[in-house]
Image (cartoon, rainbow, N blue to C red; front, side, top):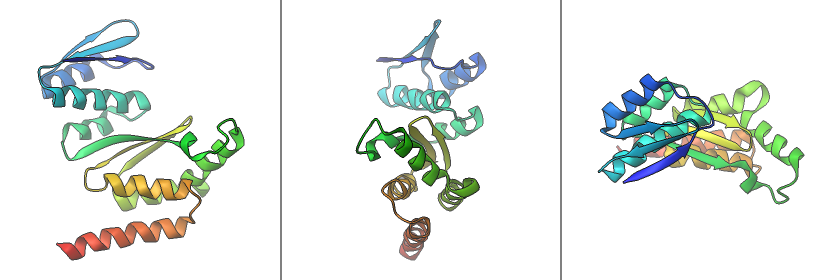
Length: 167
């Protein structure tokens, strides 16, 4: 099996070698793309996920978490929350809501869910544990839908407390 990734940013060869070694995949690099090959479809997708996260803007260190099967990378497209897709002001407003005043909203969600969030162009990238994958996604969606930040923080805390009570 193989897949191709178009490069939008340079990737260090040592990091690619680390991905090859840890996932038992073969990566071929040319001027503006990577080809990944593996007999194991899961390992192929895992390598693609790590490279996609790096291209999105996460550091090598943050991407290394994705070697662990308990971590995942996801992208939320902000434009999916804008009725008029040509409304640039709404895009800026929604990005600002997720970031919050002086970065507080983003930082609070990261700390509560133990995840890493990057906001870039018209998308939000997230690296989180499998356990918090849906929670961090839903929290960001609630903010994009217009919920108050305090409501979203309460939602996160309530969901985390429910989990503790189930243990």
